[in-house]
Length: 209
Image (tube, rainbow, N blue to C red; front, side, top):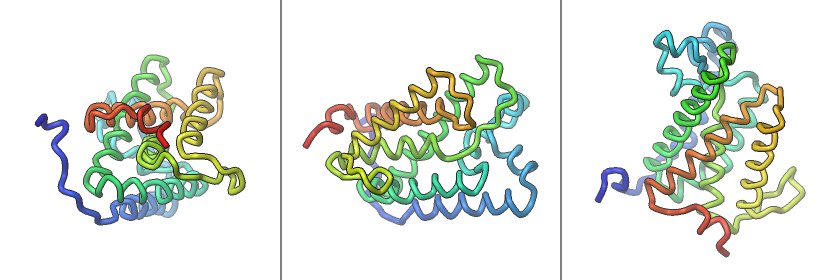
């Protein structure tokens, strides 16, 4: 068996909660110590990376711009991540989360480098969380999510709809602070992870009943 598909022994040690706590602690450090210094050290910026700060491909996903940014991401991580972790096992889920987050940042870095966006500081867990939402839809395609707490949607419809919105926002040249490309790269990396790691095409699972 290829090392890329070597499975972990199934264990559950609630890594989702650990990730949430780490994100909260990092934001507390940003908020109460020195926001600018800590954010500059952790957030992904092409000038900083080219000057040797390669750890930012990893650390950017643990820093957040404000409390609402943190709250939304951690709510999504807890809601979807805890379910995906129970399906995958904690070790597999942690690998999936970190790999997707790192590559979402790396692809964003290349996009910023190509466009000369040296002023951008990328931060937040959204790229990894988009991958987690994809995994949730693949593993639990019949799950119902209440959009805005009112509209019932099957998980694949919700995830594909959100991805379509991100794609439209990217193509329309949205100038908001939301990193739409990073979300798309997180989704794409999660898709590739299923293909390479599990030998499973998500299409086969998203539309099964």
